Length: 447
Image (cartoon, rainbow, N blue to C red; front, side):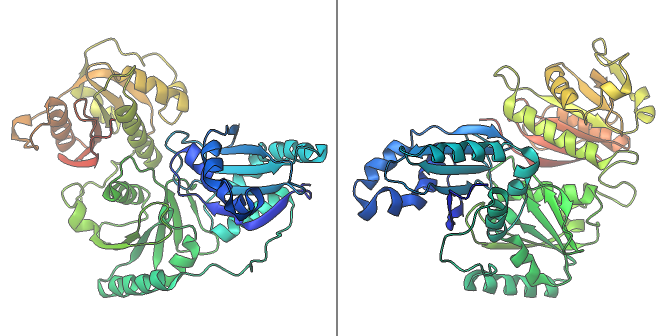
């Protein structure tokens, strides 16, 4: 289809940049011999590139085009933004093309390229979690062009440093009787070659930009999409453990070997051995698991995501604090009363489910109301702006700086089989309450 495009594996890369302008410059650096032979005027050229506009064609893909009359065969480059960009979070892949100014054939190829990348069914192959070599093959297959580089197409192996680190991590995991490896894939581009070092041990791959799935090539590998709402690594680790527990991928009595590194760095640099029972003993017990009986795991996941979005966004530029209570509604209805008219009363259950994107936005709007949300186990919003009955709240001891909303959540979850998620208006901290105990999911995410 795009045979007139020049494709080289060396120009399909993982970008380290955090903004779109930086990403464009980094991507066009792969064209240096073509654009500025000998490097003459290269620095001035890079400054001009930072102002080059990029077209967002949807599906998480952007494309940027530069004209150069000296170009005979238009070269193409592509970069993956594994963690997303700060100013364009939806952009996951950026394409760059250099067109010659004297050949109409170049423009026609560019238009066909935009049409191909704009097809969501085809473009999805570029966005899924995969090693860099597989990403390069996906680009070649999608655009139906050949590799013009002289590089070999060998399988990406772990470097000597990373290989030694993994061998030591595996030794520690075995010595500590770990039954599972939790691998944070956003630090590297080839998680398959890394997790293969752990043999048949159960492995959970955590990625911020991947799709939730089970890897078909390895029955013991599960892939979880876990967003990180903080720069602190332990925040994503904590969220990953809770998500794995809610999906029954982890048990309370398991030990986990957690391996990761700085997102997008290309190497791993840390290992942590964690006992789930010791870390979450206060939050979980034999009588009550993490998710109350009758509460769907996907409802718990969506609730945590909505709470983080409220903490980060607020409403109309102002911080908002709120509380969500989730459990079997028939068991909770006698233990709360409305402070205002219930905005969800009278609507069909199918139209007030938190799993609906429309209802998520509605919940954010009503978060400014005083009081709490009550959510049934299947995700149906039963009430908003309610006061919960918090028995024995005087016996609740929380850390300093937390107010009545947090105390009520602790007392209510201690007395009833439910969980609560609280957003602090003053600090933006998102906290989970279960069995009267609090676990901070992310602290001070506003600003």
